[in-house]
Length: 125
Image (cartoon, rainbow, N blue to C red):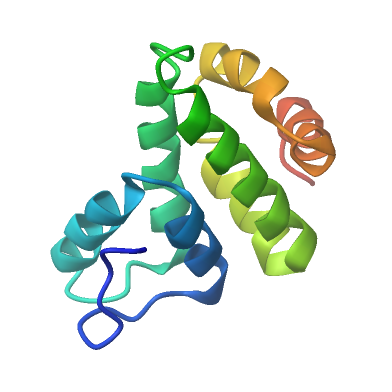
């Protein structure tokens, strides 16, 4: 269950999947929303998710369940819509360091790996 109260915080639809699936991220999202006086938007939320995942990757064995949940949610968001793909690629994956992207790759599903290759190739011109 998410710690985000819909009466207090507007949640972008592409962020809802992440909040429902990724344990521990709800508190960070609430702090971000409060800092933004409301809805931080998908780009900021996915950049914050990248920071969260980078912290989890410092001990992937200990955090394997959360990393697995996160990667499944990332793939679901990327599959659901063009907005989701954009948020995953250019707000989440691009915000990770190259080392973190490398460490995350085995956790990603097929859509996440395709987007990772796209991000590694650089933004579209």
